[in-house]
Image 1 (cartoon, protein in one colour):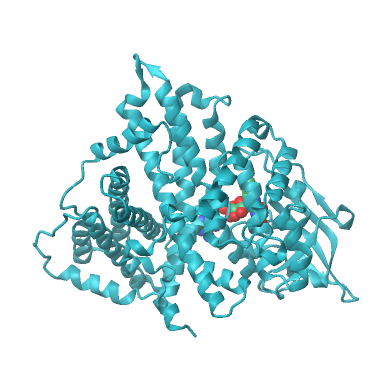
Image 2 (spheres, rainbow, N blue to C red):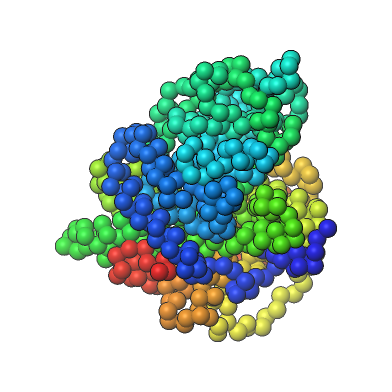
Length: 604
Ligand SMILES: Cc1cc2nc3c(=O)[nH]c(=O)nc-3n(C[C@H](O)[C@H](O)[C@H](O)COP(=O)(O)OP(=O)(O)OC[C@H]3O[C@@H](n4cnc5c(N)ncnc54)[C@H](O)[C@@H]3O)c2cc1C
């Protein structure tokens, strides 16, 4: 049963049908002193232990990755999300995002090792383990005495994660499970002490999780390190289980619970992956800006050329928007977790339900921010010109490292479809009321539009109005698609992808606008000049994407009068009263970035 307070709390996915008050969103400018100190100590750690050794990471120095991870453990960074009773720091969700963000920026090798260990390697035991399992394994993992890895993927089971062939069989004496099978692409495999392994008992519908200590004398062997495009010093191997004996007490949660564990671990992993793509963007932007200010062609620093300024403005805008949305969602999750704990739920139950509630936002962020770091590093290469293509300059590795984020923790295709699929499911369960707003949009389509000129004198008021209209676009497209296809909608993937892009752009654009509005209220319009420009600029691009994707969707399922009516609605819902001057907005942003010679929007 939900309490009244819980009912009044923001629910995952609800952003699409409600207006959010800027005062109700958390922004990076709201970090506490403790969080800022944590950020500084992580930044110092990265600048001392990682940045000077970039070359060694690129030359596949796996031992260095292990060493840095060990030191991160000594600093407490591996235990931020772990409760104090298991030797962690027991910090809140926002703080764990913050550490993940800042530790991940300098090389994807550490980002992956950190994410695999602290997320999917440690959290399944912390959240699903019995008291004995937690006492035995979690303190070692939280302090970096041991490292964890997560064995879900198999040669024949990737996106279809529940289809694995690895078998677990209870031995005749009932004391062990005997595990046989092959796992693939296992991060941290080369130096981990414990695996979370998913295997199937008999012909169970769902897989089961097991905690398996890495003991080569117990039927565990490994393939060679994989040769990868990027994240060169992240250990990735195949792991073979050949009559590997696992004590029965090492089953994680119950029989058949493995798929649920795997999916919930991925929810947490997804939002943290978004965080892990943030500081990488800040660093690329800072390096690209410094290069552009130094590099002269035609007797002019290239940073003065409009073509380069356009890129820097776009890169900075995406990073700002990614920060805004990631920390907004992180705090919403943290609030949910606190609420559940106040109501008497355990840490594990609260954390699981809190993150699950915002699984839609986790998928949105995973997709959006992983694509932002890709385009950011790509433009970073372009700004460096020929040097960008050289392995001696930093952009090449940043670009290669960025690529994996679109693949693991569920590919971006899968996450796009999940985001919309989960929203539709929530609507069916009555957890998010999509039906009434969708019907209201339907009525609006057939009514005469208002010809009043709205008052947009307040800063960003036209933008907030546009967000309201864009939500109508989503409801129009997704609502009609659900009506048309019902449960068969999941077979119409291209439609789902279009709806998902609309959903993603709305969440990201709205988050940036809300952050800027909140900061205008506590500073001034002048102090937020560039942030206002970024919010407007991002929204403008979002509107273009949404126009395009909505048109594609509408043309895919509507014909004749219905199609014409929806296209007219689309036009109405994406129309600016005052089209912003995009070139001027980019110049405002570029002036700030090039003037400060770095990504300048991190509050100190
Ligand atoms: C460097 C690296 C580290 C990794 N670390 C780990 C780890 O630590 N532990 C672990 O368990 N796994 C790990 N993985 C595995 C990773 O999670 C999978 O690669 C990923 O889930 C995709 O699975 P797949 O490679 O089998 O691709 P596939 O599932 O074969 O997908 C191939 C393509 O088809 C698309 N596709 C698949 N199914 C559908 C569908 N239903 N609808 C539409 N499109 C679809 C995908 O989006 C993708 O574009 C890692 C992978 C890499 C490369």
